[in-house]
Length: 199
DNA sequence: GACAAGATTAGCT
DNA sequence: GCTAATCTTGTCT
Image 1 (cartoon, chains in turn purple, cyan, red):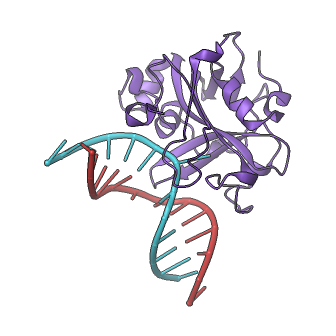
Image 2 (cartoon, rainbow, N blue to C red):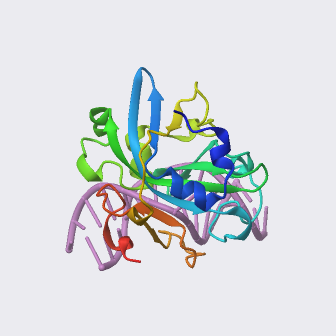
């Protein structure tokens, strides 16, 4: 079933943790790509210096101030997109960054999007994930709880044991690193690789 | 109007 | 392990 809107109105860190093990559905053209969310980060507007929404509302980040359950896609470093889901109530400026997914179906299409890169390197990072799923700034502001949306999150009934979830500092940010807001599945090889997996 | 910096990745050493 | 690639956004003139 599709996760209801109220799922995204919980505390941001709760949403980030509970999104692990959920199914990300991506539709475009006649294609449907399915993947399992294995890594997320929480960004909390009002007390988080690393959050885009911390300073003030701008045209770029205004979507983060919408009510929870819409997508927030932004372009970074000239080359790459990052895919977020807004959480909380209107005006709060919270979001969960989806950092990595495990492909479930449509993997050959994802490979094509990734120039034939496959296996655990297919979508183990926010920029790679967007490339594999063909997500770009046109996908900003989609309602992930809507039946008609091109991006949906479904609960497949997969139970994640709390001790399967590892919590670490966030990655690649220059401020606010004291927060342990990154969550990923401990034994999943599709999470972000390399040095960042130390605590 | 112009400039510096960024929630990253790929490719080379 | 390190650095270039590359462009949007926000801020300042």
